[in-house]
Image 1 (cartoon, rainbow, N blue to C red):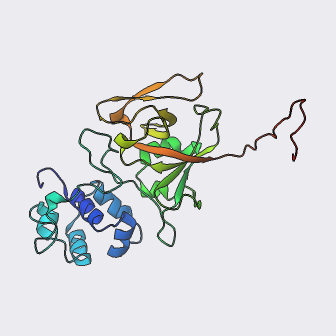
Image 2 (cartoon, rainbow, N blue to C red; image 1 turned 135 degrees about the vertical axis):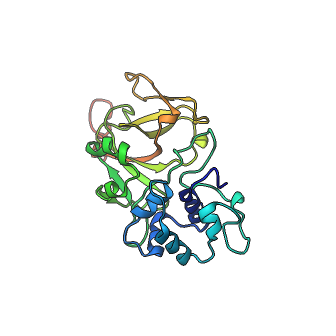
Image 3 (cartoon, helix red, strand yellow; image 1 turned 30 degrees about the horizontal axis):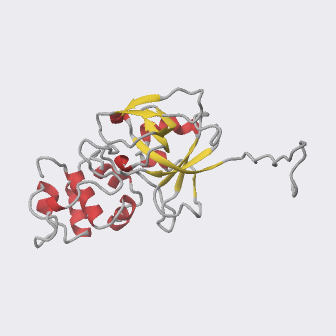
Length: 264
């Protein structure tokens, strides 16, 4: 395991084993913001001596040999062998050569109670989101909100740019989406927001993504828009549409003769 993983991978596995996200781990370590932990678990920064000491002090059961060298059990005393534990956090599962999200932990923001916010990604920020989707400093600048039916899980809200899902979802509607962990378990025909380099797409996937090497077909409900094809390896994030917000109010139903129906 030591030859295949980095310290950040082992920190990620340890946090998952303890049911902690980056925000909760940061609080435990006494950090004001989770940006340092995000960089560690994504291998964007290597922990120095002081950070190693912080981790071992915060979690005395953590084995320094396993953390630093990747040898022996994860915990002191021989419990929980490292090879029996998942490598990545739950929001970025490892499925070799299958539908994965790039092996990165999805970045989130939370409210004062520790509950995850729904991040709003408007059109003007979507190109930047495709580049900085895991940058806490960028995500902190996005608007957030809560919805009663979307209280458990990780959600994003994306303003829709085109009419790919017309007539149901139209331009400037807001698609509320849940993070897709297992691309290979996605239901056929699911409407999804697909984040690729430089762009955020709203399309349907006719079938799940089962191989990183495959080319993914993206369909539109609008018959005037042709299907797209993107390599699965180019997909950064996948979000399944669970609902949408709109400012359009349906017109009243019309009876025969062109008059509004009773009660209108």
